[in-house]
Length: 117
Image (cartoon, rainbow, N blue to C red; front, top):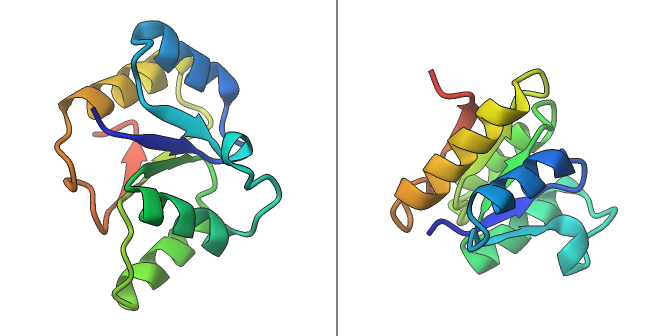
């Protein structure tokens, strides 16, 4: 199962829905690991150290910092940018599918936008 980190402003209804769908999903929130209020580079460093893919709605800044990590040759296990307008049920379904069907390291160095098309 793919380990995930939900960004500080990530919709908690999606997190709860993913956990209801499969309570063994390995997902933690930024708030759970002591990163509340941390800047984006710090938030991206934590999942890199813990091999977790970041879930975020923050298209405006996280993406640039994620690509900066890649350019610098730093680990970046992946970012899933979830559109705020996507239906909760679709976001939950896609995150669940990605977390259960992905292999370790599969999303390294990638930024993906959900819903997948």
